[in-house]
Image (cartoon, rainbow, N blue to C red; front, side):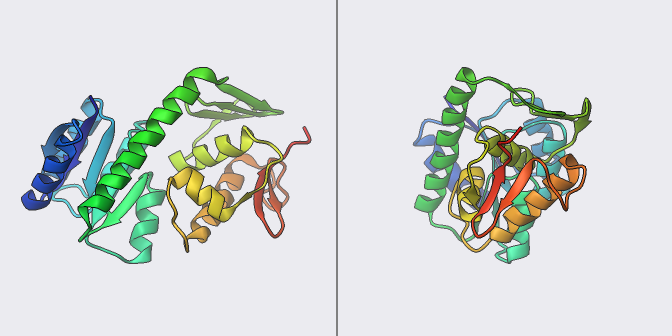
Length: 232
């Protein structure tokens, strides 16, 4: 049975979500306080965290950032009343897997929850069958431990930076458009936010390239997008 933690201070919304997720046979727990939600998420294992951004004591962005900093990579679906572009970008760059704005249609909400669960199941199957250590010269990627070493020194990456690196490193030479990377890494069509990919790539290069202006690992395919160097 899938376990879901809902951190939402509006009882009407949390109750609505509970009703529909229980119809999917999910086990549900609810916290209406940000700090309590963080402690619950950090202390127990869940398949999905549903976080409101505006919460008492600790907001959803802070919860997400702290969990990711503690290497807790439980999928996170953020909910907020805000609709500005900057809020969406901040939410996703903090490590959230998806984002939905109030008021939302319950069918869309359930579809996104199912999509996240489906991706996690597929990732678990693939992870069980794949080699976990990827090496290119002085760069080492341990997929299982979600750890990256450069010249034997650990490189701290955000969840999305790590996912981008793994995707491209496992497919060297293949060029990905920004739209493809949005779909593959964020898991759904986030059309119009291709600059988010650019920002992640730039930060990733700054962390793993000796000279980010002349990258060795992550190359630009002009007119298309990005690729991982296949000429090692």
